[in-house]
Image (cartoon, rainbow, N blue to C red; front, side, top):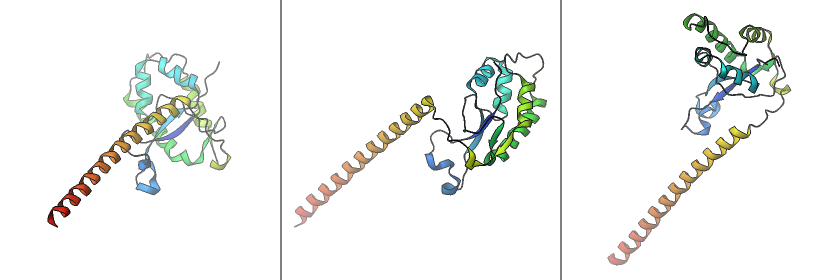
Length: 178
């Protein structure tokens, strides 16, 4: 079975920062975008390749996880064009800095990847199908949100206890001053 080399640009918010961090309109700061192959088999092939190959892709801006934006094969969302160009520039620059001679690429075909990269064309965002939810990613996101809400709940309980204590203190102080 031939691998599919289409990839999407995905905004990644650094861990520990609020969800709104990557919202340029809200914070004025955009999240970093990484490239992610749509085909899980392509990611698996890359993970089976030599560590030098994985490092080359990681250093070039690829996350070694699958993600599907819903764009058709051979197409990519128009909004990602600038980020894709930046990844292509890093891929090109890193060819000179990474020693990829005599490394095992496994099932990953670099020539086919380059052909797919050069043939890909943008598609209007309105024409994209909604992305398919990833159960693993959704579970991790849900677990992180639950943990965040628990911390928030604990802070609110502590704040409530503090306020109640202050109210009682002021009540007692006001009764003794009368």
